[in-house]
Amino acid sequence: MKILMLTPYLPYPLLSGGQIRTYNLLKQLSEKHQVTLFSLIKDNEETKYIPELLKYCADVRVFRRSKTPFTIRNIAKTAISSYPFLVIRNYVSEVTTAIEQELQRTKFDLLHAETFYMMPHLPKTKTPTILVEQTIEYLGYESYAKQATPLIRPLLNLDIKKIKRWESYYWNQADQLIVMSEQDKEFIEQTTKRRSAQNDIAVVANGVDSQWFSEKPKVSHKDPTVLFVGTFKWLPNREAVRYLVNNIWPQILEQLPKAKLHIVGNAPTKEIHNFENDHPSIVVKGRVEDIRDAFAVADVLVAPVFSGKGTRYKVLEAMASGTPLVATPTAVEGLHITENTHALIGKTSGELAEQTIRLLKSKELRQKLSQASKEFVQKKYDWQSISSQLDIIYRRIGAKNETK
Image 1 (tube, rainbow, N blue to C red):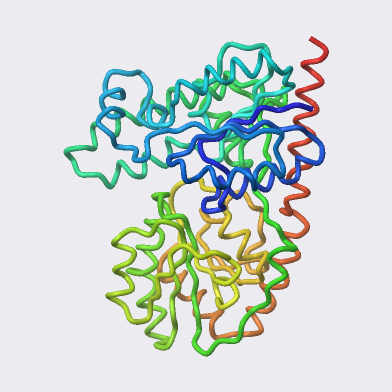
Image 2 (image 1 turned 135 degrees about the vertical axis):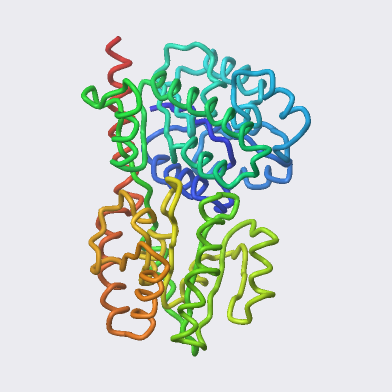
């Protein structure tokens, strides 16, 4: 099948959950389908990554959006538009023209849009459209607005209403909607007119390259080591690491004063960098070239996530690497893990600290969780299995189109 895929980012290098997902799906689907990729970029420097993607795509075209989101132009356009800021900052008119020209040249079986805010680029067409929602955007922004100052909170709430309106609109416009979990599916069914009786909401979870993670074994180290991993452009990750440092970490140090905390992830803020300056036991590594190196020296991954419906990559990667996991229910939502078998769960700072200390003190418990979680992700969340689910949807939607 011939597929035209639209993404708000270039799916390489692998710095965010969205990039990891798209890259791995392209890698798997290239064996069965011919994919043309249209992606937004912030800087021309990103074009150096196109050759990597051409290994799996028939063609790759990129389109410049503003390098920084909060430009005067973007803010002004949002003020007079019915679209939210999220759409305005990711809208490039040249994309629509390019899609129209591409549709005239090539008979595509499907249009695949990653995120609802790529949907405004689509021209009117009879080609079936699949929309993949990696997260429910307006819920994440609601969490951000609650923390905003009273002065700007009304403006944020107005923009969130716009996000909610257009996100729901495009859920209903797509021929097929794909979400990351059963919980997301149920939420959308409850908040829109869309129902899954016609199979128009499908769950295609995120995955992990189990074999790749198993290639790098654990490294012997002296001090008990806790790991936090997250892309810090995503607000729930900033909230989570702040909660870990301020509320959980002091309790762990009381019991294990020699423990170390490694904070890893793309784009750490000034506040996150300062954690290292303020706490001798904390190391802020930021972006690492090979995430396996971070897991290799970690005894436990702690994921104290309380908001947002993210990609869950840090959880899946920890399990694939054999790193025992301590998490909130939100952090593992939709993964169908078994508590005390695949992970230890805590709802408060005290519970999360207690579970982490249990693991750090018990090599036997760490080994038990490590083995069970590795087997679990190999069976349920390997990219080959996940891509097969998407392949089935592609073929079903494509077959419907042929019968019209």
